Length: 116
Image (cartoon, rainbow, N blue to C red; front, side):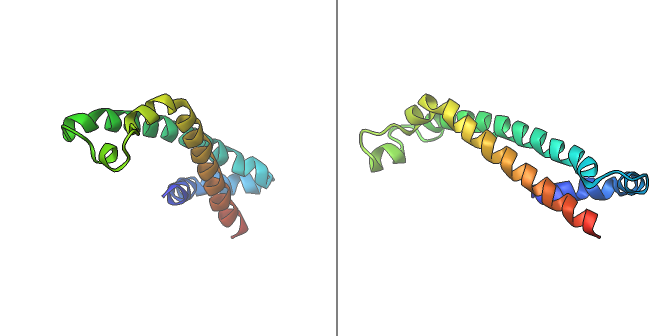
């Protein structure tokens, strides 16, 4: 999905990329804005997904009153307690993974466009 989003952004800016290539811009100069866009997208997706996880974990006791399925299957383990105690680690992992996926997708999408 990230790859297709970047491809759409490249397609909508194809005239500007063509002009940059005509005036002698290097491939790195053309790739730069899309890679930065991927970094920003990965950062905001990590923030949004972390907020979503916290909201869903907080809403589980209201959706499933009583004992949750996780507590029954793993006695002595609190899933919500684990998530809340490790939320910073989870955010960092999501941040790194989101930035990595978005940046690699941007790099591949621009590379495919620059080759043609």
